Length: 277
Image (tube, rainbow, N blue to C red; front, side, top):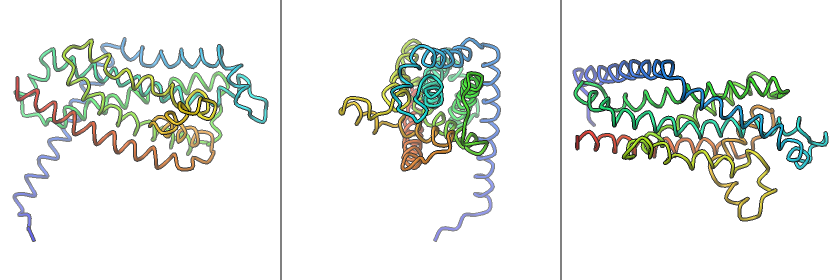
């Protein structure tokens, strides 16, 4: 049995404290950048709001009738249905912003500058992840606020709404790590803005906008077993106070899988890029 000595414990404790301090400092830098350059934030928040208005007022009447709810469907029913899909679409779209930010740091010398300093690698990437989660929650609150003005009412109450926000934060954290890896491997910032594009489209191929059983059989299978359907159904169930069935643990497993894969991939690529430079 190996016994850890007191000096080793002190070193590990000191390294953890330094990593946390680096993460806090770099997260502050990222949040300040959001304030100084708000165009990206405005796009990430404004685009989902526009999609919400478009789906509700352009397609809501027809799609709401197809839901087959007891009240006869319509715009009001579709608004209650579509909000979780718009929220998760905003989270997926936010992956492009994360990839662009890390690619800018890689190409504009910020990463090289940090490499000459005694800064933890995991802190650099974790700070990007935390800033992206904040951005995703801002987009969620914007969509939720506009939806409330339109008549959306979360029947799940305060606890359900807080639970839904927690799930959104977990999903944003997972997608951010994948996006970081995509941004690091991109040769240019333009490439970094394009590589995460599938994450923006996956919500459209899920239960976010229409039920999966209304799709052609083969597409319904794809929609049912891709990660965004469990994400959306879990958020929908928590918001509306309805049973989420197996979607809850499926969403959790997808979050763990995507976060683990993204962390290993992005850290290995970041280390390799700094070794070459």
